[in-house]
Image (tube, rainbow, N blue to C red; front, side, top):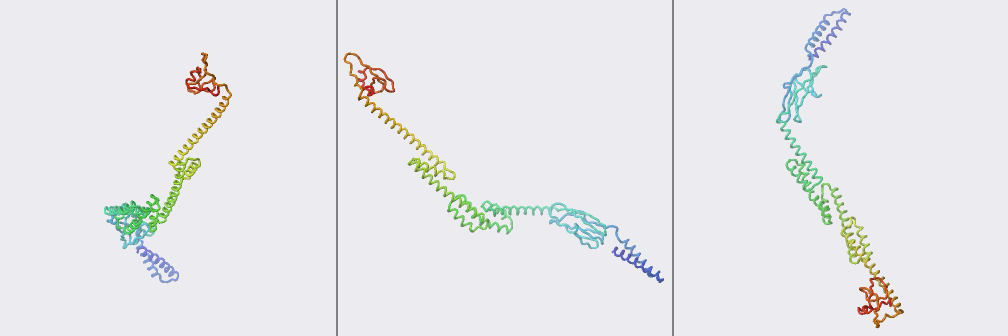
Length: 385
């Protein structure tokens, strides 16, 4: 209001001055312009007097506490003509009085700064809002409830990703303590998928055609991670196929080894080794059995070699004896016992069955009388006689 009075006074002074100058020039009466100028000057002075030098700002309480919901109301007064704001937000005033609601979101005190503006001048004052004990307790309760919700959502997310019985039980323990319909519905979906995951895990463990078919039938009804389950079943199918192939190879290798054991020949042994080498990871038991076949073959070959050598030696000996017999047919007859009292000497060996006229082979030869030699049953050597 004082600003309006000052403005009116200025306009009146300017108008009165112009009219006074014009009256002087035109030599008219100057009383009215002077009166207007005087009144305007008076208004200007009054407006200046009424205009405050700077805005004022006062709070009913410099520090106040919230209620149990974290709300506090700041009240105070400023100039009637001042503009009031908080962080750029204009606050409505009524005859200079104001009321501003503060809502805390945590358990820390908050300083609220008010700005009063009058013309080009500003005044700033701050009030502190402190959370009450009731509000802090409320925050703690809310935080605990929020922590429980976050834990339940985390456990539920894990159960949805991997719906095992263990994950479902952990999620159920947390979700059932809350009154959240959305979480309860999600938990029910997990429960429906638990048997499906159990069947898939069983198929992965057992790796049998029956378990695979059972799991496949259940996965068709899955509502969680169906694509992932189908990929896992594809892997199980591949393992079963590989397992059947390996079992077939093991059976073929076992048959080959058994045949080699029953009929140990080089061909059967080589066939057994070929079948064992076809096994992806080998087979220690069959390899050991094949090694036994190899030892048998080596022993047979060594025995055959000895037999061949003995046969050859026998043939050579027979030929030598035949040659000796032929030579004996042309040799002089064995000497007859001496009837004149002179003992004829011959050579004998400790274990030989012949007596000799000379050393004609290996062995230890000792001299003896012909009479003693014949008395022992020795006969003349065909080579010597």
